[in-house]
Image (cartoon, rainbow, N blue to C red; front, side, top):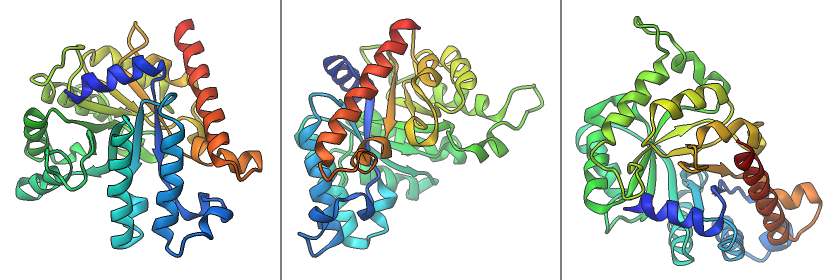
Amino acid sequence: MRIDRLIGKIRETGNPSALGLDTKIDYVPEALAHTYTGTADAIYAFNSALLEALPDIVPCVKVQAAYYEALGTAGMECFRRTIERAKMLGYAVIADAKRGDIGSTADAYAAAYLRDDSPFPADFLTVNPYFGTDGMSPFIADCAVSGKGIFALAKTSNPSGKEFQDVVLRDGRPMYELVAEKIAEWGEGLIGEEGYSSVGAVVGATYPEQGAALRRKMPRTFFLIPGYGAQGASAEHLAACFDDRGEGAVVAASRSIICAHKKRGTDDFVGAAREEAIRMREEIRVVLRRA
């Protein structure tokens, strides 16, 4: 199962983090961008250089589909090439597309990402569980066959997520706890050798108390944790999302790494990204040891 492989890569690098390639042309240094006639080609060159520089530090890559969709067909080709390049270099790859629908449409989304012959051959896909079981079933079924995995939205990192996710139900629970319960239920038949399911959950670091509560309620669910860095969450905020071994989660960081050169005022985006990735790794290690 890919979830076992992800856990293995995290142990190998000693770093539970994912490089978020939410890449815009504004993030590419002008000296690099000007050597390409097409925006998508420049972005791919930027992505590829980062990927080649970080496999000894970072175990996982999260590629945000929206930035590539915005560039049309050239962008989607860049998206595909970025996923394939990351896999070739040994990363576990998450396609962050937040897909969701029912029936044949959900099946088509699953076919695009979660089958062995998928055109966008990621190891994991983010999904929206709003449609319920019949919307999730095609994704889960393909995970059972291919060994790939999904991360379903449970408690997101954005401030207005609470408008729906924190609504209190008749039994006194907030809505996100009901969603989390269903995510755990959907994953019961897909537990890997490491004790975690191929059906994971997205749990934002910006809500540490809720994250701690969900970790207790979902002991076999692997967490994808957004919100670190540019969104304001620190390593201290996310520590409770890990299990008592300091495992069970991967922390996504995008702009804080891929735009580190801008903060440092240099065109050496590769060197700046390595420095920031190492700094993040050490910060998380310290907090998890303390926890």
